[in-house]
Image (spheres, rainbow, N blue to C red):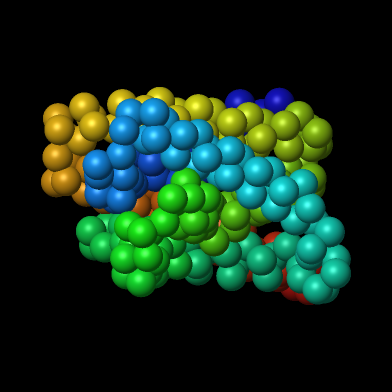
Length: 215
């Protein structure tokens, strides 16, 4: 297992899921819930996030083959998507690819908020799905492919475990951090994610050039 690759996968997945930055919205939506109800919502968020990311990590290559999508094309498109999400995070805005204002309003009236919209698309959104699919596709092309693929799944599990811990203690964390503190963290994560997105796009461009026989 390549530790650098494994660490990069974990950091990227954690950055795009952004559990710390999601705490304010989680607190707003679950305001008035009992501790037990909030715990159940947090569990559902984590289960949904794990299931969605695992499914796309396992069957991403199959999806590519069905639609004839090449890895370079997906890296470039995925990098562009991630960059838009990262740019929104750095501007202190919530990406439209994650949760719309209509979703937020509807969420206040739903019991199963842990599934929609908190689980999908807030935690397991298009950006997170794209990230795990790209990392798995990169792992399959490496010499230590199987172990590197496993490291992506480990990154997902670690992100979900940390997310559960943060959600479980979200009330205390939010009181200490405040909305401004969570926003500052999101901007740092956005900057990191922007660098990852550019790396994906450059890798896709160079790979496309190589596949075309120009290098």
